[in-house]
Image 1: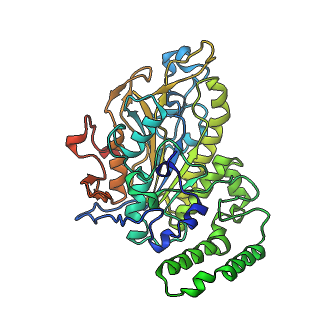
Image 2: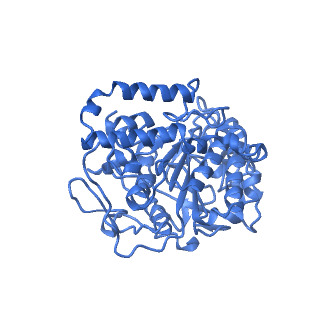
Image 3: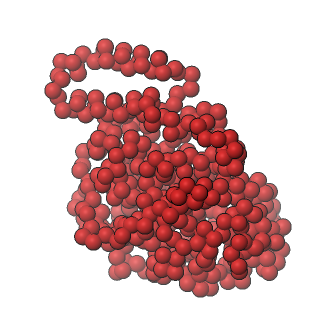
Length: 444
């Protein structure tokens, strides 16, 4: 794996000698600043929480149930439940989300036809077809570019955060470079101490951290000999910001013990639930893009046993997130995006060695959008009777992503800064799109 394929850690960030708050490049000396669009769309949203269903969730067991298709398609999950919106029903293991359906819309006609994790993940998160000569940035990196340090964001927490582990399928920053890679927290927010990498070190007291800093200063003879050197001034500023993270008020942001036990219980005392709570705290702080990398959905074998474990946790955490954002007045300005790289085969693979598994499926799958100006209580598109093909209103990844950008006030036709000076737009222009279903105007 090369440098462009790694997600930057907090320690690597510090070692690069550049902190985003100082507007310095991470691991790159190229100045890649976005050209301001002439007339950006009016922003309705200021932040995104992306619930990335790593591995690809089954659309027919979640937000597009097909009980009439029969046992070979539904297995034991053949009793979808009504929601608080007339005419909309969802999977039977999502009763809490069923009571929040007025807050979100379901896109049941997502499509791209790719069944491989790496290429599908790249396409769904960049809107670009894999295999081109350029490696394009994902949505989080683009939002970090247009809503981050170069455009008014002043938070000490990086503008693009992943909870808790890197997605790992492709280089999130693409040609934008390492400055726009996400900060992956590591750790587990469901543990007593959320050990955020490079910020919270278990077993090391604040006093010991300060003593280490003093020792570093005592040994820094070169810096003392060249106090006017610009490079050392940048390192000093980076160090100051880093210690503000480790020892200052910013560290408290990652301390979920500051939340009431009742609220933490509502989110669920599991990694996903507490990640949802942490995501809410981050957007409340002002972080413009947060990804929850939610693993466990690549269910080739014993699919239904996994669904019985995973879906109740997803239901609890996601429903609490929507309700909490709404109660705090944050949902109107925060987009919640649920989805993965594809769906899973509608027809169950009962035979050995799968024993009731579902495989990768890109021809038709679902995504969910809530908040940030998107209307709730709606269905966009439709799949056929078995969930195998798009029956109405196909939605391609670039249609979906372009809609997010517009709600964020990012002109999809804006130029992206390319280190070689190439003319590259935020979303592919019409002449580069093989197919398009158009923006999600039904819910915008």
